[in-house]
Image (tube, rainbow, N blue to C red; front, side):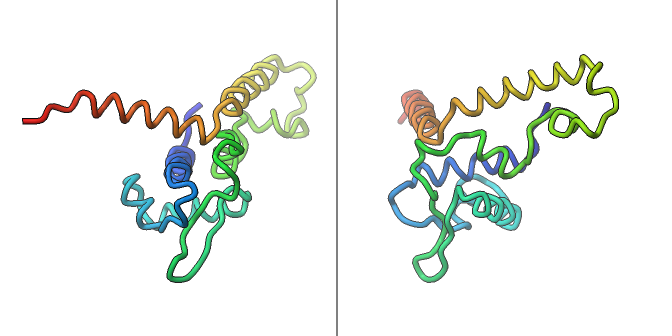
Amino acid sequence: MKLSTKGRYGTRAMLELALDYKKGPVLLRNIARRQEISERYLERMMTALVSAGLVRSSRGKHGGFTLAKPPGEIRLSQVIQAVEGSIAPSSCVDDPKLCDRVDICITRDIWKRLKKSMLETLDSITLESMVEMQKKKSAKSEARMYYI
């Protein structure tokens, strides 16, 4: 299973908002610039995240985007599903009516287990934990810098 750019970029945008949590709204162009994402593409993802209730948008001079909840209350599974939709590797996992072989199909059982495992992993990660991971990674990167 492979995440699309929506999942990868949506996660990076949410991390950016989490890094700036409580600092006020963040402009779309600033998120796009810092995360190297097309502003037009990012705009569509932010619409999905607002619709999912994960992000708030405000207009005006001091407008922009903010998290709708604290970073510790937003799970990566919510972000991925908001921008990607279901993470089921096969549509029959979410809708058994799509297949006549549901009762005898062993592969569907495997796909269900795979979806469950992925959700458990994504549920275990909050934006707050991602912020901490980012800080550690940034500290390691800065420690390797050589100044002349």
